[in-house]
Length: 83
Image (cartoon, rainbow, N blue to C red; front, side, top):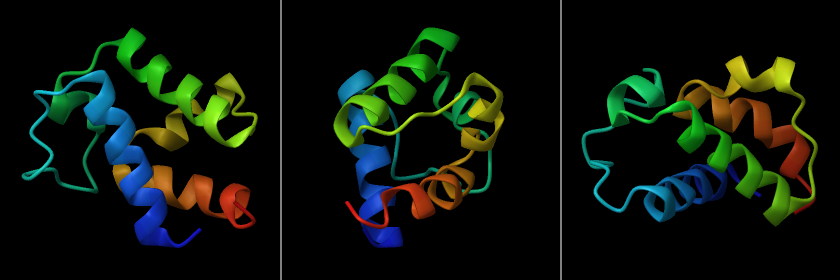
């Protein structure tokens, strides 16, 4: 998968969780939870959906690496290369 494809997957998952999320004004370097007012369950839903769709393991200690859109892409890129 390319960077743009991974970015779009993440945004699609966020849209599925919160269809009112303002993704047009999203700053890719700022924390998703702060910008989109996601609670811990919403964040966990994103992680679980990534696991389900792509059969990847994301250990809890790696969750901080998924804080921003940019960091999500950087974290997922090597794991989704073959997808």
